[in-house]
Amino acid sequence: MVLAASQRVLARLLVVASVALVVSCGNDEPQPSITVGAGDSIESSVLAEIYADALARAGVRTAVDPRLGSRADYLAALDADRVQVVGEHTGALLAHLDEHTTARLPEQVKDAVSAALPEGLVVSDRADGTDLRPRVLLTAQAAAQDRVRSVRDLAPRCGGLTVGVAATPGLLPQAGSDRVAGCDFAATVAFPDPAALRKALLEGRVQVGLLGGPAELTPGATDGLAVLSDDEYAVRAENVLPLFRKGLLDRRQIKKLDYVAGELTTDELAAMIRNVRDDGAAPSDVARAWLDKHSL
Image (cartoon, rainbow, N blue to C red):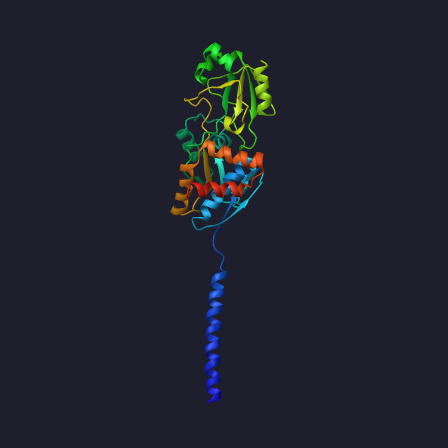
């Protein structure tokens, strides 16, 4: 009797142990994960954190691989599957993929990007509310005197003018950003920052400025200057969009990225970049706060 009872107890313990082992093995199975890559710019880091957190909220295990280098570097990492998602600009990405493209309007540029992508890479919706194009500048005095309000108004005069070019700190690299359709400037001068460009314009050392991004990113850089309108996209469209490996995301996850695209604006992205660049905030913190604000 004692022996039989002991055998029954032992059998129950073996069953429990077997179930625990099965559960343990099941829990240890690795789930699919996605690494979002970021280049060296602050904008790239912010976008990577936004995409990673948004996908995590759609049920994916995610991580961010920061400071991968230049556009060529993080695109190489994407091609090699070391990362699976990166944030990009439509126009700059297109210029990188096809330097001879003539596409300039937002939808044209997006379609041209899709056509030029290497096999195995795709994009989802662009963020229509983001306009990261370089801005064309004149002094307020020159704009009023010559009645120049748009890039179209400026075009007939470009051949006799020198343009100064300055990048905007924190933005993704702007490949082809010194090109203005219909404007063949007499000369181009590079400046180290927007403040130096503004000074050169006000002193008359250059007659036109090309600021590498929206003025919201560089407060004070356009004081005393006129920002010309460009409704015809003489400067190629630059909208934010995610670039990722084909077949990686399911419909729900792509929809999550599309929701991000539908909410992101120039003003909000500029504010996040400035918060990291000027105030020392962590990209993950500003990304999380933005997603929470938009209930994403």
